[in-house]
Image 1 (tube, rainbow, N blue to C red):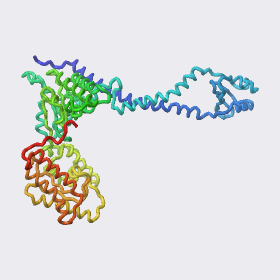
Image 2 (image 1 turned 180 degrees about the vertical axis):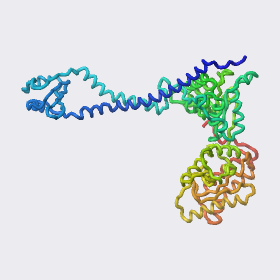
Image 3 (image 1 turned 120 degrees about the vertical axis):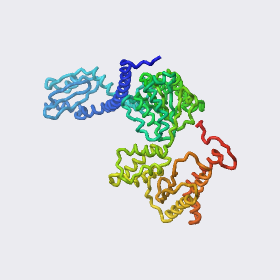
Image 4 (image 1 turned 180 degrees about the horizontal axis):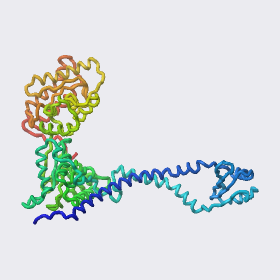
Length: 554
């Protein structure tokens, strides 16, 4: 059966849904901010009224009022409940006097021998209005304070849709046409992009696949270390396909109320189906997708309920609904097997650290808009940054630009990039004062690493030695990998341990002392040796793996 082209009415309905969603979010944000300001104003309203009205009127006693009337100073007297409002003749302004409840003002004045005809005397009936006003003024601050605390609590809890909308999805919708990220903006990752290009082609040309009976890929799982560009890849897929993009973090499903996570999952998938073709992107899915049955606490039950709902929703997709779920995680080993089976996340795309060509491409992309002088060599930058992620490279170039701007230089040079690369991995320089003995100890220690590395045949070349402290280190010997490696040999690992111990050896040989500066060397050497024994089978115990060193129930 041929697939029907979406009608004009369907497209209009989708645009209407998007506009309604955006309008609702903007309206909710406007009312949330406005209500808080209004409540703060109401909270201080009685004090403001008291300052404006009561602060300008002097209060006098009834006997003083009688005296002033006898002296012909009073022009007008108005009775409002227990309050006597007095208007004077000679620019003395307005004053007030208060009588006791149950007594008539006219009777009090007559008993004092005052002829009411001598003044403009009036009685204002304010019994009902006064009572309402006093009730409002007494209870308004309490009500305003209660509502203010309610809104503050709701904002802290993260609810932007109110009590009636707490179960709604918190996903951000990137409207079709407004997502400008393309595959050309993603440097390196050639294999990963090739895998995702098929998803783009399916969303653009679904007939091409349905004609031969191909099923829609329901989900793609992006697995890789932090900073390698998983989120950027997902946005590039949406930009290339020209479809709606719904983005949400795994932690945003969870809330303090039971059942909210499952409700938000239902609402998310329902919205995506209405906006189809669309992409749902769940970042850090391990927050809700961990192996089930590993705990009995309420938090585990709520998380598992949310995960179950996502599994049900992915199973409920019709073959040609054109909704694709892309999820990202750096802990793929912790995910529940039900998520990873075919029919849910059909594809697993590994997004690893870029190789030399990838680093060069990424650096070139992030270099746009920054001026560089002729000393900058991008091939050298790529070789220098083995093990750097895309985020590290972006941060490195930004730090290099800051370094150039700090000294008012108009262009970034290679030295700026070198310093920035070291800063990204080791931290900023610390100009702390060191004694001559400390500097001497640090120098011997670092040279010990360098000398041992130089004379061993399989180690990488020393790139830089410094006794200027960075981070927690008093000095450092920088020995970056000379090239990308997919394997490590036993010989190279043993030589790495030997280089790490070279600092302590130099201290003992030249200074006849042992210092605490080697503690980090021991830590790194122990980690390498431990991995060789319990993971790689490189010890006399034989080729035995003693199990994972991480408990997945954590």
